[in-house]
Length: 334
Image (cartoon, rainbow, N blue to C red; front, side):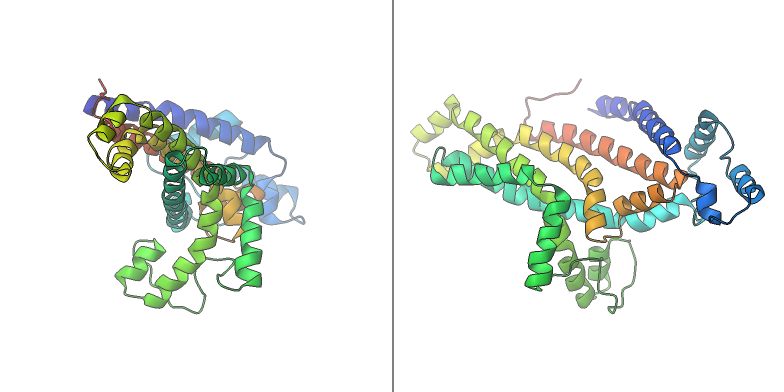
């Protein structure tokens, strides 16, 4: 197992280089000049040339990428062209918000989707089964931004139950400790901040988690149906075990390997999907930061954010592979 983990970590380097190189090239191909964006439309050509020279924007793309990559090896992601702040500082201030949103969305997807898939499989070809799968198909088909707007209209505007944007009420005092707002609210015993942060989290988490919830429900159902047809399930039923014990004690664990695969892949994809969700709900996360950086042609900030996305995606997949051995002892890595 240790050698497998080391091997996977070594494979991280070419993946990161490939992803960041593509992102670096695409952002440079996009129209617009970051130097002119910084200085405004009335800047002289001399001022623009000075800014381009200062940030190395006058160099060929491959040279700029090489300079950026050498900085990454030293732990330096560069400076934002627009704010002149360190990219790592910009990312660290937003990244906890995105992680909180992704974790909340995945918990929603796992709890609702997993339970729905189990119920649907245990009542195959019933009204419950058709209803659950119909809802799952509808969930997969809904665009995140459309669902987000609908949720905002119903629960935020019409009913007024939940806030429709932001991370916390501006009038509530808040002390940052770890950067994770819910954790910091608990650490500092700030109950109003905890309640407000959870309320602000509900709608974007539901919007972001609906698609993976539907996928988890469908995969769980398919995997459960396959397991329920196995000989050992018939043996357990023959022993006189209740149907509930057969399903939740024996069938569920054996059906979890493909479900864990879907969960791992979707958690990485949630970070990319968070771009739309954070934009719709004005969520101050890494996805919204990427959108702002793209609009402003802030090359170092865009590539820095994509670097973080790529690292998280690869690490989540590695953790998923490791979990296989605990769910199914028959799986071994050499």
